[in-house]
Length: 388
Image (cartoon, rainbow, N blue to C red):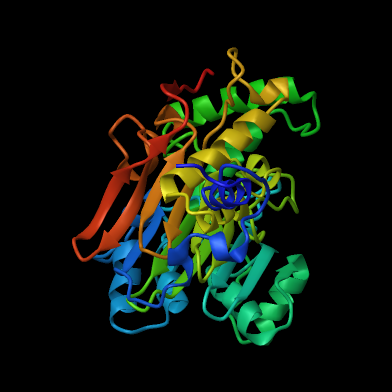
């Protein structure tokens, strides 16, 4: 049967065989505007199903319970990550987070509310154990998104939030003092020399039991969807351990550490923040969801972008692949989800919070089946070793 040229072009365009750039609204994935109910689920980085702050439930279980009880999705997620922010054993988030190069704990956080189309964030916040709560106050009470440094602390104080002189625990302060003693105090050395020196120091601190793992860029991202299909997300962190004071990573930045589109989905990250920032990966992932990609494929596509854009020798292994960890957590409006990582296994995570299974990269999930930790999909086969 013959087909006219006009009809062929029309059919080809509809099938995505020709053309480029963003899809027109009529050709977007049909499920992103659906109004039917979703299967409630909460996902998070793997520490979201480990730490309990002395209680009986983890972050993802707390968030899921409160969400299905009818609490606002974002409020439920923040109540979950508060567990980690308050837990003195979790040294990458909140109270007891590993401090900057001067021994000061500086915290970052960002939250996004899908239905309200609003967001808030804080960066370099000192003296507040739960920065995620301050981020939400920024979202609810101001016309701004991001407030930083001394201004963020003054803002928190103005809303009656307790300010403490020091968020270090005995553990975090001891780790910092040993890092200070063992490392070269000149923080602006040649990058290759500094990277090698930092690795030697981390190895020695880990061997001597002063660090739970060699991970120095821990974070928690937590995203959820309720039965109404309402999607929200939050990310909170103490940032890169022993960073230059004032350094801000990806966690509080919209489109990097977190991005939510209430009609499409959510994405967040943990790992090397600078690599994520260069690519605004969470925004890219959500746009991939908008085009109909499954969460796994949307996240792996972002990792491919990061991999191709990593060109500095100090950030590459001998074979040219990235020498760092980066993981994304992805949730779409159907309730489908995935965790994707640069490598399936990173031995630097081996001792983190009892992660005894050789450092496999996982993510936390809680739904009607209960809380669990699931293996991430990896872009590059093999293990990222500490001597890479």
